[in-house]
Image 1: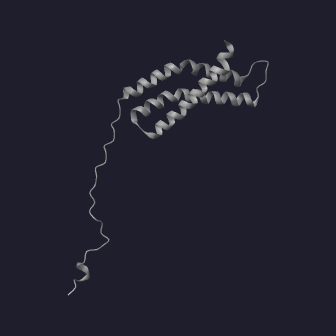
Image 2: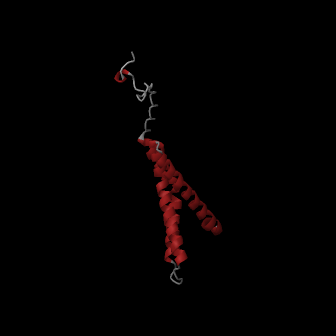
Length: 131
């Protein structure tokens, strides 16, 4: 005599799966890593930040004899944005090293690329012609 339907095990029940332990997340580094990277970065970028900030203001404001054009205002705003990127880059890099998050690494790489581009612009466009 066949078994009643209620006694037949269901085929829908999940088979017992052995759960593998997840690898433990790497611990955060010391806050001194972030502080050190930030201070060294700001010390290295201090001169370019001040120079680009002044040049951006001069280009955007114009001279007493010249007129201010839309191109000079756009160039000044772009210079100020590059200055902000140079200020933010060491802090974001220090936080990315400390916390180990992908989003912070992405932001650090983006601001780092803008900082390198701004330093190349300062060197090629302003410092080399003066020498």
